Length: 171
Image (tube, rainbow, N blue to C red; front, side, top):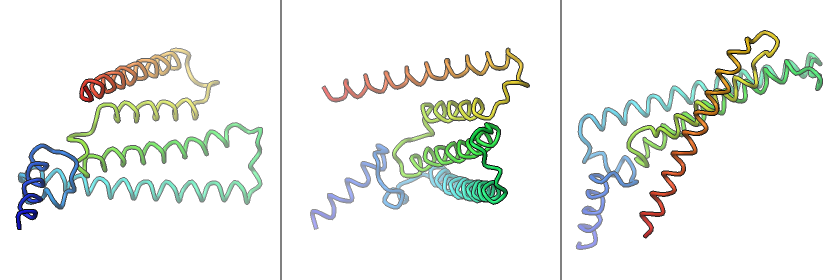
């Protein structure tokens, strides 16, 4: 009997302090708005899963048609640009879904800035993979490059802050 009460107290404390616990255990203690957020996150997760599935099927169809048509030429960079662009799109969508799942599983309160910056870096990396250098203006390349540098610096600063906080909390 005492152990069951201790478990209930632990669940209530973790729901209030937002420590990682399952949504099921915390549902009864959530406010109406927190429940609304959880439902929105579930719907978003489902939608992103569908987008990833459709993109994966499209990638498989394109690769199959390239192989059947015999167009796969290792020296033709345009084909590789298309394939790797599609793969990067899948990776970006999956990373976005992962950041939503972290919030759903109550491992973080909101979508973390670090995750958003990582998604932006992935999107820029994809842009550099699919960009046609012959048709792109130099100023656009410079702007994209500066964006990568700035986002990389911000990501590094956030990582340093996170490492410093972890060190501080360990002491």
